[in-house]
Length: 249
Length: 324
Image 1 (cartoon, rainbow over the protein chains, first blue to last red):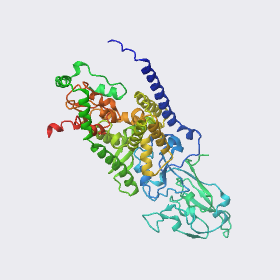
Image 2 (image 1 turned 180 degrees about the horizontal axis):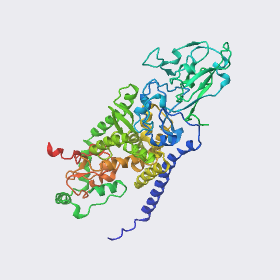
Image 3 (image 1 turned 120 degrees about the vertical axis):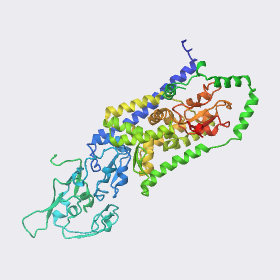
Image 4 (image 1 turned 45 degrees about the vertical axis):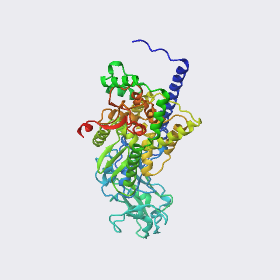
């Protein structure tokens, strides 16, 4: 085989330029995608992931970013991460204060919808879910701890969040704003908790006339965030520590 | 053209003129007859101009755009109006309840997660079969929403280029192969689906279905580069999804074929093509057969079929022509 004749200098120059362009633009694309690491490396606070989410690292790896979990959620609690989440782009999370998961689908639909098992298929009941743990973040403003009642719409008239009230409509969630309360002592976090025994109000003294109660979270808490959404104080007195497990400091 | 050659050209090798022994006797006879009856250049130019002037069809482009829009609109409607025909996004979906998974997304997840997922096997098998059947990079031109935007950006680029306002800067086609390997390696090494962070296909599909996102800035940046700097940069030189589907559709019953008999070799097809290296055989004397299937990189977009005034480029379903 004869060696190819060398192309003329201007062609060689164009080849060199083409090579440089390819390296530069290709490198830019790869570098740009790797910038997805930054938000993760900044170690911002953990996101509340939908029920059944694997460990964060594994969750980001196995999620195929299709949003099928978003589509089946009856309260539309699940939203997909934007570019600000880096590698978490297109990965689902829940902003509990805006719209919590209240398990009104009854059968953890998001888990059933997940095509990769990033929301683990080993769970089948809401009681088995562990998204995080509720914590009384601001005890001083908690109405129950002051023995105060609550009257009106839990989050105001303009709040778009929805919740399924079984006594109102077994099948369809309604706006929280359309369901005003009149409570002698505020017990919204306990009243609307979808998991039995996950949270209770404990008297703060032995005096039976003392109406003050403190919310106490138990091991049964799944971290769905319903208490954080319904809490009528601003900001919420009770919040979810995403990913936190019982017994973890 | 052998499968190996077709794949090598798809992976960046420059196409070459076939060696004399690669031509079939019939093809050689056609080329010989053309050489014997050479028209003078003015006459030839007049015939070509006349044929192109009376041939202004966009049949396949229109069919393709309708299909592309329909698929993407079905995704949107399925969610917004709970039609439930195609749930999910282009990365993974359920089509009337059946799992579908984009081959490249499934690959990235498998490499990052390092686990074989049964649902993904089901989803990819269905999709694999579908795209093998349709052949080439059919996904790219018939489904990918970025492709459509890029086509419009390309039209703008060509308009500006005609006025000398911009110039096309080509990249090496091997860039795409290197990026494919890098992204696969990154998924494996970091445990994150790194490519998905910039994939305009995924970003656009999700934005259509779930509402606009800041990530669309990446799509805008790519389009701007394609208008101002390098024609069809992403689809031509970068997108790993293209390679995945080109490999899957390399041998397929559906293909575009080239028949040199009536061809004037004026090269109009190569000018409209996203991947003109698959049309190298349309150069005068290059076609080794009477009936030549286009290479693996062909997106089956049909632009060459539309523009060809002599019917030398046609869609073909292997075996079906004999059957009918």
